[in-house]
Picture (cartoon, rainbow, N blue to C red):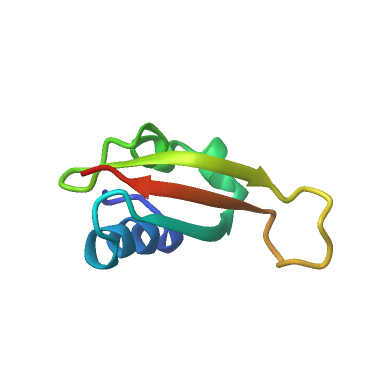
Length: 80
């Protein structure tokens, strides 16, 4: 996970530390998670030691003003 952004790392670490099995989590994240190469492992749910499944991804294109970076909302469930 050496080239992941802080948002991705924070999301996965929060799942690991704070969710029980089948727990749900939601974050607003950069839209780059859809396409940037450094997020490939995250998109596939192939992070070592942390198993999760995306439930909802909401593209926030057109939502203004939200952030200086294009954003999306991601809801996932920890798989136990």
